[in-house]
View (cartoon, chains in turn brown, red):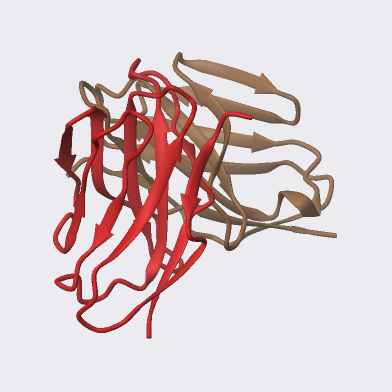
Length: 111
Length: 113
C-alpha cells in the first residue's frame, strides 16, 4: 500500500510566526503533489499544487518539494488565527487517477 | 459558477435501508471520486470513475455501490451491507490530465437513526 504520512499534531504557533508542515510519501515515482486545507466540518479546499523540485510560492504559502528525499512541505508565513485548520497532503499515484491522502496535520495559530 | 454539488447535506439511515448520496459537477471533469472521512482521520477512497459507464473500486468499496451514466453525475449508494455507515462523505472531481488537482463538493454527513 502506497503511503503518505503526516504528523497529526496539533502544531501550535503564535500569530505572525511561520508554520511548517511536512509530508513524506513512499512511492518514488510520484510526480504530482497537493496541499489542501480543511476547516472543521467542512470539505478540503486546494491551497497549492507542486510538480517540480524546489519551492513554489503563492502569497503567504510556500510549497517545497524534494523528490530525492521523498518529502513535500508547506510553509505558512505570517500565520493568522484564520489559518487554524487541518492541512492534508495528497500525492497522485503514478500511472493512475488515484490520489493518496495523508491523515492531515492540525494547525493551531494562537492569537 | 462551476462547481460540485452534493446533496443532501445531512442524511439519516435506518437499519436495513439503502440510501443514495447525490454528486453533480458542471466543471466538465472526466474523473469523479467518492471518499469517506471518519472523525480525526484522513480520506479513504470508496470508488472512482474515469469515464462514463466505467468505475473502479477504491480501498473500502464493500457495502457501497455507484453508477456513472452521465459525465456530470456520480451517485453513491450506501447499502444495508455497510454496517458502520456513519461518516462524512466527500465527492471530488478532476480533469483527465493526471497532473490536475481534485476539487471537492461540500460533503454529506450520514448518520444512523
